[in-house]
Structures are given as C-alpha cells and as structure tokens.
Length: 106
Image (cartoon, rainbow, N blue to C red):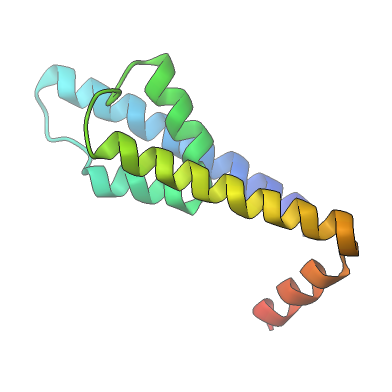
C-alpha cells in the first residue's frame, strides 16, 4: 500500500509540474490556457511540490494573485497534515493511522 501511495504522489507531482510547463507554453503562443482552477486542483490533490517547483523553476504565475496565495495555502495545509501524521506516529505508533486508513477504505 505504501508503494501505491508513493507512486500516486510521484505521478500527481509530475502531472502538476508539466501542467505548469504546458500552461506557460500556451501563454507564450497565445493559445487557450489551462484554467487556474485545474492547476490549483492538481496541487490540492497532492501535487503542491510539483506545482511550486514549476512555478519557481520556469517562473510561471509567480506574481499572479490570488493564485499564488491559494497555492501557498494549499502547500501549507498539506504540510500541517503531514506534520500531524508524523507527530501521531511518533507519539502513538502507526496503528491509529493504519486503523483510520483501513476504516476509510472499507
């Protein structure tokens, strides 16, 4: 299961990164753009690392507000969730999280 979660996050971050790359290419050529909602949705689904990396590396949508604020808020929210899960594992072991995940999947 851990492998699938890792592969998911790898895939969603690659997708988010290349969505930014394609959107910048479309912006330069004057073609129809990828909606900001779609870019933010990719970040919300776990692709915030890929989205922020692309934003900084290819310098796309770095000054666009409120897009930048939403993207940073999504990344912060994900960081808080990951930190909460890490603290839970450190304090109680992995059992509570594994039980929660198995209840959600069944």
